[in-house]
Length: 212
Ligand code: GRF
Image 1 (cartoon, helix red, strand yellow):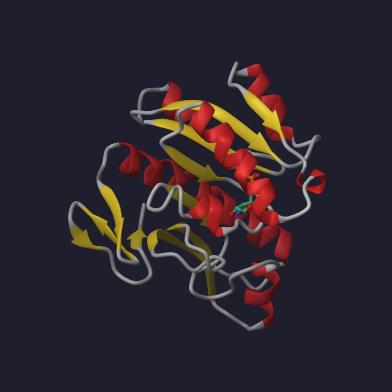
Image 2 (image 1 turned 90 degrees about the horizontal axis):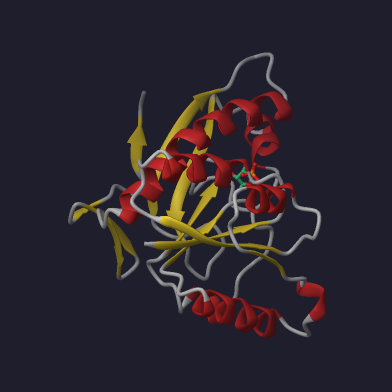
C-alpha cells in the first residue's frame, strides 16, 4: 500500500508510523508527504528519510476545492492508495474526501464523538472530565465525525493542565496510530456505508478500545 501523509507541523505521529514501516511492522511504503506550511518540522523529517515531499500553500488557491484538486493530482501522480492525516490543519472538501473514501485516516486528540475541532484538552479539563484520549477514525466530509477505528483513554489527573494532558495523550497517539495504519495496510479494516469494520465485524461506535 502506497501511503501519503498530510501534515502542517511537528509530524510526530507521521514519524512513529514511518519508524514502524521501516521496522517492517506495516506492509506499506511512504511515498509522499504533503504540507500546507513551509516550515513544518515534518517536512525536514521527510527530506532526511528520502521521502518525496511537497509544500503546497492553500493561500495560493481561490477556493478549498481548487486547492484540493491540486492535492488529488499530486496523490494520483504518486499513485497513492491511502492518505494518513497527521496534524493537517485544514478542512478538506468533498473533492479530496470522495476520491479517497475509506482510504483516509485521521487521528484526533479526544474521545470522539466528544470534542471535535480544536482545543480538545482544555475543553475536557473545563468540563471536569475524568478521562481524555485519542481516536483514529475514517475521514468523512463532516469534521472529525467519520467512523471510529481505534480509541485510547488517558486518565485526567488533578495536576493536569492542557500541556501536560496533551503530552500523555500524544504518547497514546504514538501507539494507536501506527496500529490503525497497520490494520489498514493489512486490509483488516474497511469503511462501508458510513460504518467501520475490523476483520469484517462492525467496530463499536467509539472504536476498538485500546489497552496496553
Ligand atoms: C496530534 O495531537 C493529533 O492528534 C492532531 O494533531 C496533532 C499532531 O501532532 N490531529 P504531530 O504533528 O503528529 O506531532
